[in-house]
Length: 478
Ligand code: NAP
Image (cartoon, rainbow, N blue to C red; front, side, top):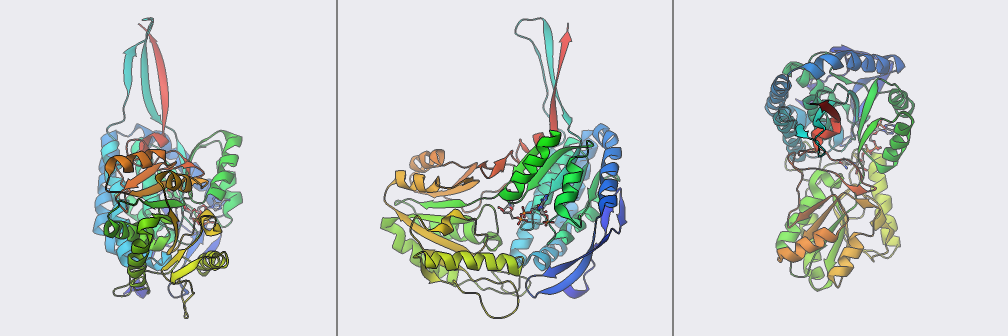
């Protein structure tokens, strides 16, 4: 069934499926085989996408919010109806297991549903000025043509988390998926077309030379907004690029989440939460718990139970029966994980399970638990794989200091039976999001985003649509 799947392989520009300046091989990281080839965009296609989005903007901005909402609602229904197909695509091109992929698709669909509801609720304001000399009218207008750049780890959800609010706000857009995983984004274009998105409103390009071509698009005055999800290194570069043309940016960047277990925590619940926080998406999530800080008095119990749960996971091709941990997205990414673990061991770490690349084809790396000192270099890196370094602490203050000893600040996890203590800890930790006694808190209805080197802006929740709206003040003599 899988080998005979139909793929969308062309670029989607101005409502047409078009070829480009060449082709890119798309690999299945579980087998190393080429799945198919996808068209790449040259300068001509990138220019055509910007022109199409620019032409479509006035019409889409004027379209009644209710109409935009209905289209998004239809897109939500189509994604849910076609969830198995989309999940299969994700598993094939990304390597994650089918259950994770299906979870991602349903999560991705919720962004269309949430923003179909938000499309008709854009707030405004009308009031008397304090001096009484005028009326203050505040309204929000769509920013304009938006460039949406997404990573490979959530090929569906990172796209819909941007496309949903952009469509709801009345913006037109150019979507640029990661080179490893464009098939899911192309399938989403097909769904949006069938949901009734007018031509030119959503376009997709896969540039043959990403850096220079994105740079050229950012310098095009018709492009007014950049929404990026990816690594901090690339995000930093794009903020610099955007400074040249003063365009709005929102940046969802890397994470290195601390998972703090205080000495009064329910250890079984903490282990269960740790499995979710670490292993959702095979550890390849910006929200993945990467640094496990465990109170010394409960560290043995936590480590024993967590190691047992990690070692019990079945690692296999993401589409095979019973698979619980799939492949990394590529051999290159898998080797990065292995290098970090090797250097952690050289730095004095003690392995409890895993730590060795398995024989055979595919970009696999096993579930790995390793006890390390608080100065081990692995703690400075976003591992992006199934690796859990454990460090012990002896006071809440030490735990907070360790959690904050990172340049990243996306999400943190805190486990304690004492809610007041957990909230005090959550307030002291420098991160945009904190999960208390829970392994996953991502929710389209909540603001997602980080502080420090993890980014700027928020996606989802009530904030998400504002990344695509400009505030306008109209002062009225009255
Ligand atoms: P990446 O290397 O930064 O790539 C992300 C996207 O940026 C891809 O589409 C990539 O295109 C593009 N890109 C690369 N270089 C570029 C350049 N010079 N100019 C413009 N675009 C460029 O990140 P990744 O490895 O795909 O994803 C993993 C990272 O994403 C991790 O750090 C993870 O934490 C982060 N992430 C953050 C969030 C969040 O919400 N905070 C969510 C998910 C992932 P090509 O594929 O063509 O190179």
